[in-house]
Image 1 (cartoon, helix red, strand yellow):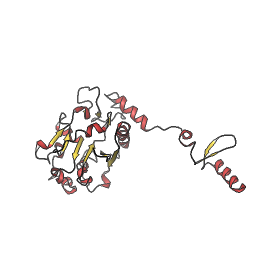
Image 2 (tube, helix red, strand yellow):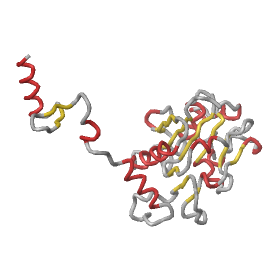
Image 3 (tube, one colour):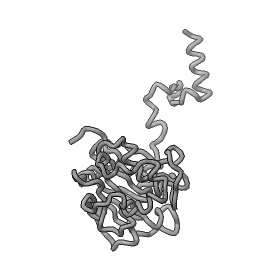
Image 4 (cartoon, helix red, strand yellow):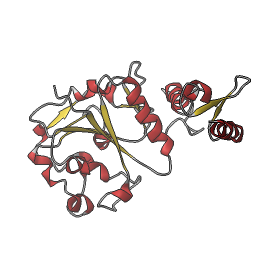
Length: 245
């Protein structure tokens, strides 16, 4: 097994950055191996083509971004990982060009793709190809592969489409294809509570005193209070101490 971090690319949409925050945090909280997570920010990439989302087509640049080496995972933004992402990478099958959830409708295959970046079949996924609608016509159906035998499959627990699939207790990845539960219209759906719990987890912090109270960046007053060095009172204390030396 490689000791390199698991490479994960997440589609990014500037209209809902909270989705990225929650998804990446859900991965970090449950991963048993180091991960390297990269957002696909369209303005930083050598294409301008977009669809319903900014990452509609940029997802297909993953093998190119990895310099045609190793395995890498792409995930849609509207997801929540509820299992150890290393388990999904375990479905990387040598000889396959890409591994998707074939139990879902074909247009959902590209929402979670485990790329064998070095596979020759993926070499066509150059920026100029992805940008060209005449050549790159139906990539979401994995049409660039040509040989169906080069497409592997992982189970639907790793791409459970909320609202489309029958309820599935124990899903390891919930996919909110109709919108994340941050929207009032979506709240109450399957795995809504899990998404909201992750949201609260990654948007909270412990008190400043807990995090910084024992650091070198504080000053203790005579009456026992602890202040950040940038506080005016702390600055006055440090000035007196410097003068007294």
